[in-house]
Image 1 (cartoon, rainbow, N blue to C red):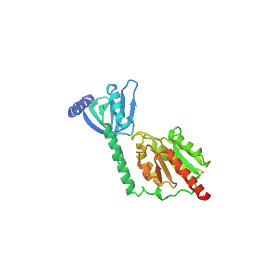
Image 2 (cartoon, rainbow, N blue to C red):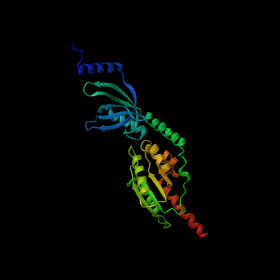
Image 3 (cartoon, rainbow, N blue to C red):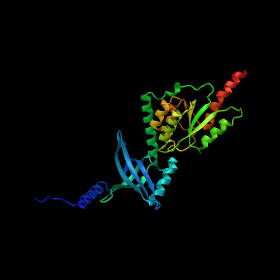
Image 4 (spheres, helix red, strand yellow):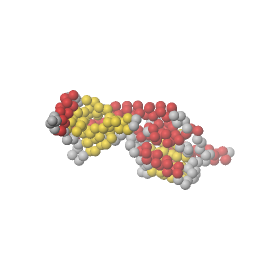
Length: 289
């Protein structure tokens, strides 16, 4: 008996009719940017995903056409002071498309920058709550510096202004105090920053030199640029570090999870240099009294 069948193209055409008919208007979709590729023709191609406890649970292709990209990018930057990038959670308005060859995709014509900022704050609070439950928020506070800390391991980007300010202020001090300062290079913003900083921490702890403290330095930036310092894995590694960790990240108004779990945080790299100079000044004054 001959079996009834339909062709693949007919099946997929039916799916196209159903999906695009079920979503005739543009809809708001919440997702994370897992890849972003701006082409020379001005179009921007993205992969959007959603993660669950065990990894990715949904993924779809998306497009921002050149006619909309400049407006979306400029407006997003004006609100967040950052460009759209991989790892960001976004709320995008899109039309659902289905192509028999290329499958499901979304055409994006608007992105809500306020949602991305709010999503970062929600994720930050979830991280704080988790670290508190696990008893990690105050581990570093139990560690003490030597009376005269001498060997300092610095994690920063080699060309960062904050690292340069710290180094000059500390090593060119008017008192002639000498320190052994070594830079451990790391990426200090973006999706790859937490893993890069954790790698630098591991290099410090497994190397031949016993340092008195670890210093994490990063100059100013936008909220989204500095969101990497709210990462759970990075905060956990700082909290469990057997050496005192000091942070100087961002501007005066910035306060990140990495600052919260560190032994001590200050507002600027120069202020951090002053903290270590003060150890020597105080002891010098004591001995001179």
